[in-house]
Length: 121
Length: 107
Image 1 (cartoon, rainbow over the protein chains, first blue to last red):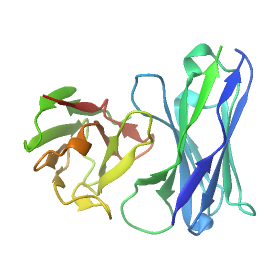
Image 2 (image 1 turned 45 degrees about the vertical axis):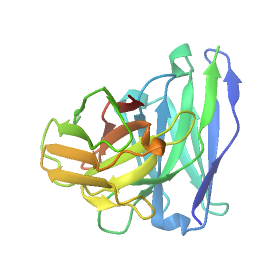
Image 3 (image 1 turned 90 degrees about the vertical axis):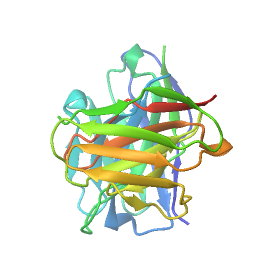
């Protein structure tokens, strides 16, 4: 069964950095990518970027360029997302989601991790 | 960036009702449109991908239609477990973008 398990909740001070992990199981990690999506309290879904599990190619949303770093460790099938210079409006639940990569066809987010609440205060 | 506009933002419906949610893209995205369901405190769950394909394990009362710029999610007979928020998302290009969501509430 395909699973993504994320690291636990964090509380950070403004200006600090955060790092969320996303451990994959049940599928070939290098055949898919991982997207990161966040959701501020009571708000909608915001895509932050994507990293290929195949070759490490990265695509960041312009909004986060310069402040975010996404990486993978193929030896442990884990993806990481680091966000720096945190502000109060970065308070959100951060999700990782598997996204189709090297295979042709529709691209979709499935499954999703359980989410990691990061509070900046 | 491709803007996704969902309507309505919220609706009230009864068990057994037919429910339709629409999503419009700011430019043509072919069939690169996905629908997700999200319940409070939970991660989103994929319902429909490629505009019309039902994700494995999703009940057949859910269906998707449309192409180009206009898309629809239909729930043929609303069940108690369907009260949730629904999001459309385009996978045509990056940045991936979502609609603002449609909250389906109990009437």
